[in-house]
Image (cartoon, rainbow, N blue to C red):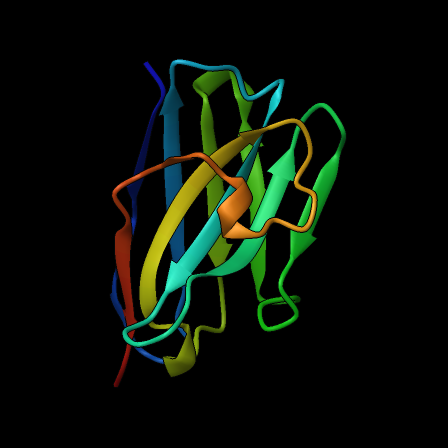
Length: 124
């Protein structure tokens, strides 16, 4: 059974950092891409970052480039999203999701299995 569980969200001041984790089970990170997505109230879900082990894809949305870093630990079946220099506009519910193969355009509609999400709030 495919499962993804996010953790690491919270309340942080602007300029602060958080590290999100996505623990996966039921499949191998060797063959699947993992994407991070976020959704703020009243807005459409958007892709933040994606990584695929087999093909070496690492992609970021323009809005987070230089601030966020995605990484993986295949032995622990976990993907991380290190978020630095956080801004109020980063406030959202963050999800991880998976698809077989490459990241592609990491459109959320192409990802079939999702976690429950973890809330990130950036506020002073």
